[in-house]
Length: 286
Image (cartoon, rainbow, N blue to C red; front, side, top):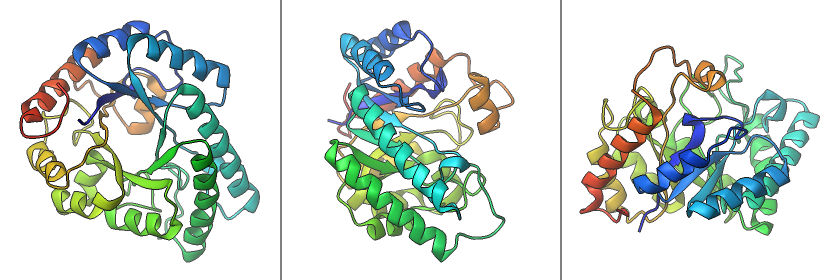
């Protein structure tokens, strides 16, 4: 059965808020796990949050974004090394949280552009660094689920085909990929076909609407997406990712400038209804 989850970016970027009621709400709604932004390396904090999740029976997936100061494609060797070391510490934090997967676009720096296509040197630097990170992740029992972004958030990896080629170049069993329907809606000509191509390496799926609001309320063809996931017999986690006007730092980064849903609770409730609609034809938990 596929586990169903929600990315906590709807409520926080730091995980410093009190989220016990949110955890209980998500569990009671029917969700199996949360996707947790792990943006610092305070092991005691992540152990504490892990225990809170254990108490309500929620599993967890960790996610992270790296800024330009921690970019594996930086021209500066010192920055690339800092990126490798930070990702190792993030993996330690994910382990302390109780996660077995770390997802995100940490192959390069988020919102960092040169005005040119990625170079062979950037490719080689990122692949080399990611092998080191994957080696460390494997020793800690963590699988990496790498994400491509759309062209407005990243220039290094912006399509399923590029990400597949990257994972194959890293060539490590702990380095796999995830699929986000928001970025794919912008960059792919055919989402079901992109999912089929990702199938050999796919370990995580994010369900996200074209405007980042309630899944099922916009242009993304989720029926076609769920059919494709059924076709490839995808058994991994499926997570709702949506952004609102809060937290303000994330709203600014995602360019969210208007209210597009009533509340996070309304959004995840409606998203669960979308999941339920497909549950009979797909191996979704109910």
